[in-house]
Length: 347
Picture (cartoon, rainbow, N blue to C red):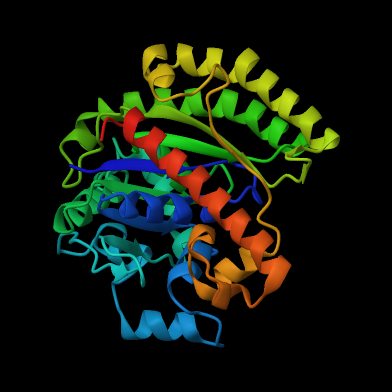
C-alpha cells in the first residue's frame, strides 16, 4: 500500500502546490511511482499538468473526461449511488514517467457541508457513514491500480471538514511556510488545531458505524514530516535581515510550542528518525529561496523549476548562466527533500 503525504497549511500563499508538484516529480525521477492529488478547488496543481489557459479548457476537460477528477470520482459515495468507488483514471504527467495526477474540481467545495455533517452525525445517520472513509479509500484504490509508492495531496488553505479528513487520514503531513508574521500565526493555529483533529480521528476510527461502512474510516497513523520554508529573498547567499528575523520567530514557534503540542498528540516520529534523515531540532525539511521569474516559466512550461531549459527561459549569455545556476541549486534542494522523505517514510 502506498504512503499518503498531505501538504497542508491553513495559510495561503506559501507555495504548497509548487512544493507538491516539484517533490512529486523528484520522487518519480528517483524511481518511485507517484500519484498527485489536487484537493484544492482552485485547481492550481491541475493547471501545472493540464493546459487550462484557454477559456473553457477546464470545463471541456470535465465534459470529455467524466469521473476523471476528484469530485466526480467520489460521487458514488457523496450522492449515495448504488455503485462502488473505483480507481481514478489518472492523467499522466507529461515528461515524467511514473507520475500521475488526480485532477481537482472547482466544485469540490460543494461537498464540504455534506462531509462536515457526516463527520458529526455518521453514527446516527446511516446514509452518511460512507463519507468519512471515502477519500482515503479512493486514494488506496487508485494507488493500487498504479502500483504507486506515494500519494501526494495538495490541500487548500483553511480548516474545513475536507482538509480535516484529508490530513487525518494521511500517513504523514508536511507544512510549507513563509518567513513572515502570518505564517508564525498560522503555526500557532496548527499547534491547537491538529492535535484536536488527531483526537477526533482516533475517536472516529472507533465508531462502529464508520468501522462497518463500505469505506471504513482508517485507523489514524498521522505523523509530522517537517516544515518547508520558502518565498524569501537572498543577499550574499543568505536570507535578508528582515526574513532572517522571521526565520528565528518560526523556529521559536516550532520548537517552543508546535513540537511539544505535536509530541503530546502523538504526531511525531521518534527523534532518531528525524536525526537519521538529517533534520535538526526545528524539524525543517528544507529552506527554498524565492523562485522569482522561474515560477512563471515553470507554470508556463508545466515543468518543475529544476527541469527548466534555456529554451523555456528564453535568455542567453550572463542572464541564462545565472538562471542555470539557480535551476541547478533548486535541483539539489528538491533532491535533498526527496531523500529526506524516503528516509522518514522508510522507502
